[in-house]
Length: 92
Image 1 (cartoon, rainbow, N blue to C red):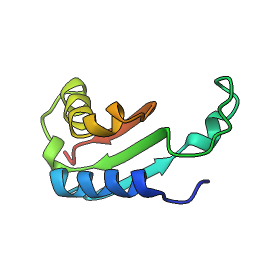
Image 2: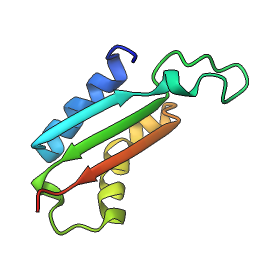
Image 3: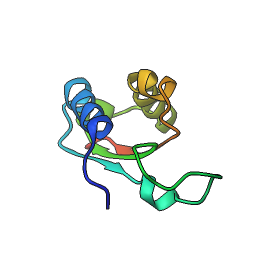
Image 4: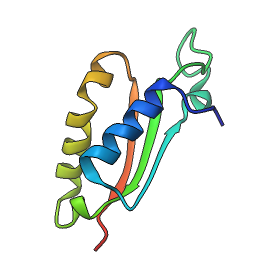
């Protein structure tokens, strides 16, 4: 597994501030995608997985949870984050 880099650190901080999660993992999975695109060697932080449990999401639909996270990560997506896997749920 790749070490935590600047992007995963920023995303972790954003998730903590916005959602006060009970549990949170921001995982760089870029290395798992090496060779999937011409010239991509799996280096960097282009494929991120977010695993989170937060009461903030109680009562929200899956679509609205994904919208909230994608909105929070809009700058990073615009700057080149290629894939954002979201495994998130509320506490209830």
